[in-house]
Length: 562
Figure 1 (tube, rainbow, N blue to C red):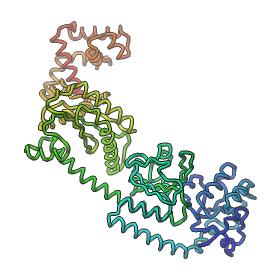
Figure 2: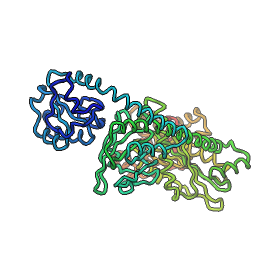
Figure 3: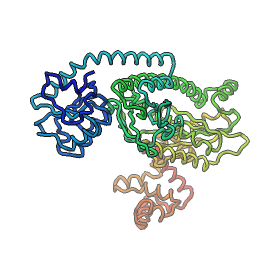
Figure 4: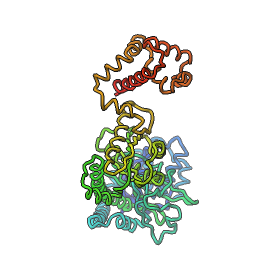
């Protein structure tokens, strides 16, 4: 492979000279790159020779020093700066640091273009690339064979660790541990500074939050320093991804030796094979989930009528046929929009799975045995208890649902949750009725744009009665006969007497409380109530009239807020 020492002897670019870092003259050059952007530090690899006009660091001594340190840390071959553009002579601070780190610092005569220098050096290194490509192909074949033979994460991780001679950690897309491979020659065992519990975060948020969120931001493996227990460890992070979908990450901890050019190639191959492994694992999980979902779909739509079938399937999926059950439905609505529907489906499924895991984490607080599954943008939670126990009070079921909401809203960002609770039924054969209750509750919450995050079926009892037993023309007629005059006055004068009535009844006809809730003066509220009495020719004291007015208000919401 071409070295910096040999580069200085190439006649076609005669005039290049070394001004610092002679200790690195035997550094090997695998590829030539241009550095004119400080963000490029994340994408550099070892053995690269960097060319620059010096524009990005011409006015900043701090950035000049950072360039030298960063290139030395990742074992770049050297830095070559074109003279007479922004520098007549290289700064002393850069020369001193290059000597300290042994990083070759070169001067390129003004008459040479950077593109010409790249072409000349690449011509010299082509033969070396043939050998590298052969090694790369051999490694790819080895990893692919492991995947075909079902070796999975464990063998792929071990093969990668053997190749790059450093510990390897494989994480899912939420940075939870999937697998790790430590080495006997690692003087800093992973257990000393990482949390190595499977399916739990291995790194703290302070570290993972520094990684770009979107795969389009990651061109190749990126470098980060991980600090823990007084240690500072260089890490290389590679996404396991297909197109824009991230399945996880490989983290190489550089605790045994520095990475070389082929190690980065090996990392890219391992990421590709692991992506295939993750896709396969995802499909297996999806098949299991579909089988489970098919059972619950049939159960919650009342399609299973055979007692024998219900008994065997319930046993298989962890339900008790002799328990009473009620259903909670969690509706998930992401705040973000997705142009790609497939990407939206993947993200929703991922969010739903995280939510289901969180719910299982507090299952011990439920008033019975908890089972849940997710489908599309909903999580269905079933809570069953021995039939000999008294029914769960509505207040208790709402309290648990409120706790679920607090947990999900606190852990899942940029997502809106609504939770509907169905009534409890004494038999699993009627569980589909509780699901229908919860689903209907969600529908009404969305229809009325209810600000409450948690509601029980019984909270909308009057709406259920009206919506299912009265036709729209009948509801319209009843409303006009009862509150038509108030509605007409609102439209003619641009006021809100209908809203005033709703607040009046919502606060048990307490004028002060209702006025406060509407953010108006008490006297203004009293004036409005007097106007309503005048329009309706009533004193709002007759119980029969009050009932009719309240029903008309419910009908108004059904007719006008759908």
